[in-house]
Length: 453
Image (cartoon, rainbow, N blue to C red):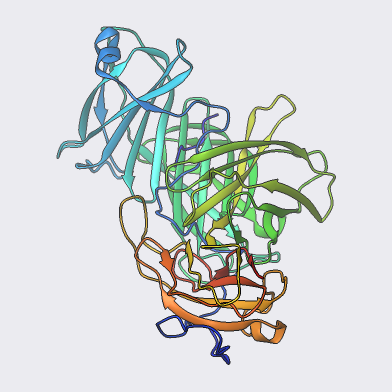
């Protein structure tokens, strides 16, 4: 089945340093394990094992195309104009997905010229929280095909429980041979169960999953039958206490430079469950990597270590995903993922003579920075420790662990920073602490040692 391609404390400053300009950063560290995806809501995970999808070139379009048309409605039969509809075609010639999009007219109608294929799909995006698709479409060259998009409704009831109970939304995925539906549903209040209704394309779904957080979810079987414009007779009922979850245990703040080895823990996975572990980097799904399949032994907490690729993009999240698969490697419904924040900190020189000045440069994640779009400037603090030291584990008072606050400053809108010149008094270790925001939790960079001869 196809998955959608979709946070300082003042300290005594060593007089041997030139202070960095700016005020001290303040904030608290966000729980790494909870919450919704901090990036754009539409940012999905790429398919493991599939070639990266490509826009269909003109030549290919002219070679063998079909017309695909229909009308997009909501579950009350109201036409949805100005919405995005996409066709996808699988090319057996080069083992690649090709695609193009259109926008529905005021009456909800759409028409697209798609590549002919025996594995076609039509995806619709009625709003920022909803997507659904017609799957396994066959389009012959020169043909015209009607693909109506008129959903129904499914009731969802989710009991809160287990170690993570603060979810403010549910992400529900329904999988069928001919249809797929996904919707993010806001919890109306903090009570339990969470009773909500999702919009789902008409069809029969034989498998489903519900994510309470991006790193906690549960899967279950069907069938769930949905009729256009009507409420399904089936209510999806799940209990969070039964959910599977993953979280990062090292590095402590789940952050660091490209090439860092990350230790994650799987919790509440049944014995024999296989997970295909993959990774990708925001914002463009680059640095994709398959880390292999790991089989659970049924322990309450089982560790898995992976190495973030050296090509992971600094200033963004690197997402490590756990896809449930069967013995043959076929994808099953549950996909959970955990984010590692990729950040850098590099002194201009690693070895200097006493009295020499250096600068420190780097990049940290900051809210709103996405591709060419700049985000909010972020407060950072530069710390130094004599000799060799690991990343601080005391977030509020690193000085209690021997760290000295050199100073603080703000990054640019893309998260980059360059300190004024610094004059280390002796051999020591640097680390940068950065504040949190609505997308990222506060964390530390990896450390770097500067030798003073």
